[in-house]
Length: 534
Image (cartoon, rainbow, N blue to C red; front, side, top):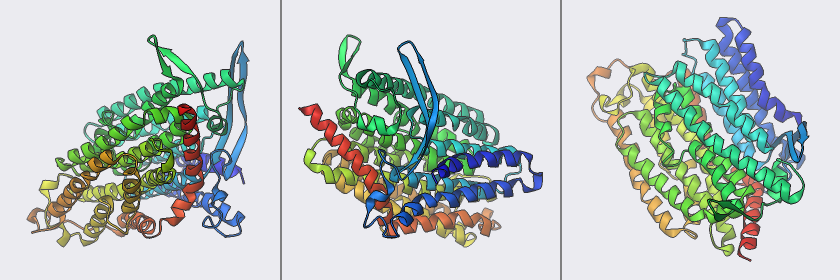
C-alpha cells in the first residue's frame, strides 16, 4: 500500500477540483468529505505497522514504524534526471513516512478537517475559500511526506500561495499587509534554505561521486571539510546547517524573525489561524529536526550553545509579549512564539555536549517532538475559542468583556481547559512535553533551563489573567444577550480536547511512535560529533 502516501498528499487537491465544480449549496459538504476521508486514511499510517506486527504493538517492537533510512511507508519512483557537463541533477518522486512524520501527517489531516468544520459560517466566496484550504492541506502533507530534499523544498513553496490568498482575501482590516509580510519573510528564508540544499547536494556529490537528494542517502553520508568564506575557513557542515536553519527559524518562528506571526494571526480568519499555528509553524520545527540535525549533525553541534540561548530567549520573550497584549489573537500568537521555544531548546540539548548524556538527549528530542503535536492541538483549541467569541461579539479585546461565564458556560469551560493545557497542567499534553524538555535539558544546559523555567510564571499569569478578566466576575451588562457556543462550534473544540487529554494521560503511544526515528537521529549526531573531536 505504498500508494497510500500519494493518495494522502493529492486527495485534497482532487477535493479542491471537486469543490470548484460542485453546486454552491454543497461546496462545504464536499470539502468536509474530502478532508474527513483524508483524516481517516491518515490513521492507517499508524495502524498499518501495528497490524504488520500482529498487534504486538510498538511497546514490544518499536522498529515497526521505521526510520529515515527505512521508513514504514515508502512510495518512490524516478522523476527528474539529467546531466549537463559535470552537473548532475537527480530528483526522485520519493514519499515516505516514519514515526517522526506519521504523527504530523495525522495532526495535519485532523486540523484540516476541523478547519473546514470551523469555517461553516464563511459566506464570502466559500467555493474559493474551501478549495484553497484543500490545496494548503496538500502542500503541508507533501512537506511531511517528502523524502527527497528537492521535493521537500517544492512542497514547502506550494503552501505559500493558498496561505497568502486566505489571509489577503478573507482576513481582517490589515489583511494585505499581513499576507505580504508572511510571504516575504517565508521567501527570504526559502532562498537561504535552497542555498543550503544546493551546498549539501553538490558537495556530497563531489565527495562521494553519488548525486542524490534522498533522505536515506543524506542521513548516511556526511559532508566533510571546510569552506572559505571571506578568506576564513568555516566548517562546511556549519555553513549548511546555518543556511537551512535560517529558513526553518523564520517559519518556527524564532526571535528576531517572529514579527510576521502576530500580524498574520491577527488578520487571518479563525480556521486559517488554527492551521497557521497548528501546522505551518511545525513545518519549521520538523525541518530543524528532520533535516538540519540529521543531515548536518556536526554543524548543529557547533551551533548548539547559541541555539540553546535562542530557545530560552524565545520562551521568555514570547511569554513577556503575551503578558501585555489586549487582543486575544495576538496574545495567543505571542504564546506560540514562547511555546515553540521549547522545541528549539530540546533540539539544542539533543545536539549539545556530553557523549554520556545520550539518554537525556533522546528524551529532550522526544519532548521537542511531542511539543510540536501538543502545541498544534492546544493552540488550535485556543484559536477556535477566540473565533467563536468573535463571531458573536465581533471584538477580541480582553478589557471589553467580563463575566461571560454566566451567558457562555460551555465556551468558558472549554476555553479554561485549553488555557490550563497551554500552561502545562499535569494530566494534559502540554505537561508531558514540557516535563520531558525541562528535566532532560537541565542535564546539558542548566542555566538556559532555569531561565526558560522562569517563563512558566509569566505563562500562568497571562493565560489566567485573560480567562479571569473575560469570563469570570460580574457580567458586563453589554453582553447580557450573547449566546453560548453552538453544538457545531463546540465539535472541533471537544475533539481537540479529547486529543489533549489522551496524550496527557497516556503519552506512551506517541513516545513509542517517535522512538525509532529519534534514536537514529541521536546516534547519527553522536557519531558525527565523535568524529569531529577526533
